[in-house]
Length: 323
Ligand SMILES: NC(=O)c1ccc[n+]([C@@H]2O[C@H](COP(=O)([O-])OP(=O)(O)OC[C@H]3O[C@@H](n4cnc5c(N)ncnc54)[C@H](OP(=O)(O)O)[C@@H]3O)[C@@H](O)[C@H]2O)c1
Image (cartoon, rainbow, N blue to C red):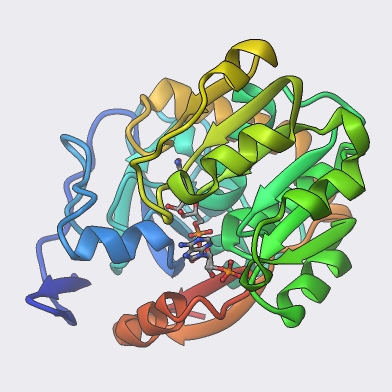
């Protein structure tokens, strides 16, 4: 089969071995996959795949099931599915544990479905399972127009949680508000503290979903409420920080670090089952939408990475292979 391979500084569409189907696995003919920021880090050697995972890039896909292990009952050959992957999505075929595969929500295309698994699983896991978000609690979402951010805004709207986003530029603020955010702050204008405090009042925000880390850490502590939860899911602003830990103690703040990719199959299956139960109906009814900035042919993945690296995209960049 063919797959996108990292050769030096380039992404090359080239022949590689077809992956073997393991116990409990499903083989999918990939129709579309999508870019995640982690892919840009992985190609530079900074985010190696967990043990046993494919070295090929790609954390999600949508396509048609073409083979299943004899013990798999969840899906059958011919099903239109999407899947959460630990790697291997930038290829003609991928194999994945059945628990990480779901039938595509009713009415969605392969392109739309390919944009869902990684960012919705990340947002769901961190807001609800790790962050314990309750109806009505206020949420601060950094990088609100990112793939994860656009998923999180919509999930929060769906569970009646007001959201404040930080982004770059008016175009992204407007896009986030259109998706359901209450207010947006342009990070080029400086600290978000005053704007968040004006929005949230003296109570502060209960939950922060933060892929930025160091540069936002102290300001995050300042705007969190008593018993607030800070979910650290990325390090785009660095990792080293000097902070007054007294704020964590006095406000009983929980700082939670979280990655999705290295979790067990059982843990990922639980997240996927939760998405199917709690979020798939909202996709089917149109209340939640796949947010796709661009669709680029998979063999031209380099163009998609350049687009993501420019920090100008809203939602997801999808890589299409078959229609
Ligand atoms: N822990 C996990 O399991 C997990 C899973 C998935 C994703 N993530 C993380 O979640 C983040 C979003 O991923 P994604 O694929 O959805 O990203 P994306 O769509 O590529 O969007 C990332 C956005 O972050 C903003 N940004 C870039 N550098 C920044 C900086 N130094 N400070 C503040 N904002 C910055 C930019 O938007 P603006 O310029 O508009 O702010 C950029 O467009 C990444 O950090 C990724 O690693 C974590």
